[in-house]
Image (cartoon, rainbow, N blue to C red; front, side):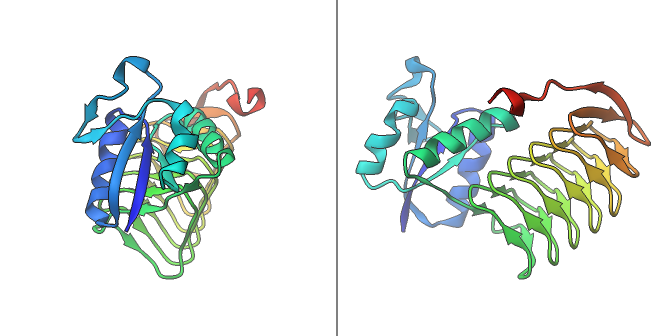
Amino acid sequence: MKKLIIWGAGGHGKVVLDVARAMDEFTEIVFLDDAAERCGKLFCGCRIMGGREQLGLLKERGYRLFVAAIGDNWVRARCYEQAQARGLAGATLVHPSATVSLSARIGHGTVVMPRAVINAEAQVGENVVVNTGAILEHDCVVGDHAHLSPGAVAGGGANIGAFAQLGMGAVALPGAEIGEGAVAGAGAVVLDSIPPGVIAVGVPARPLERRWMAAAAR
């Protein structure tokens, strides 16, 4: 049995907590949140220990595993990297109702939500969110810090770049390419590709605007 830190006491943190509890592997679960006024308060029955300044102290108290429970890919990545720099390891959380092929690979710090499906030979990077009911078909590749929103579907061999997001109910057809930091909006259908940093919407998905690439500023 292990101790777990969940960084982010918000809506996404509630769902991550449910996944961790359903796994029944952790003796203690605490939260971190950088809002100073929340320090010491209870959140969903777990104590908020403070902000990032508590990472070292919690490690001394026997906490070795953490998960960044923040929806924004860029912010989640910064938290993930800071916790790793303090010697903590990303926990891989998979809800018992999810279906994960024995041949699939899932990176550290990734959370697989209820009823998600990860099929044969799919590869999922670190600190990824595979949200409720999302489907990754065979041979998909998902880069670090990406997010598959609830109900998103990636067909066989689709490639989802680092920091990219498939919106709620979005579909990437087999072999489609979603570039680094790109977004397929809710309900979009990606027939071929979305360039890096571009937001695309509609059926078929068409470019709407180019995002500011936060990775360049980190």
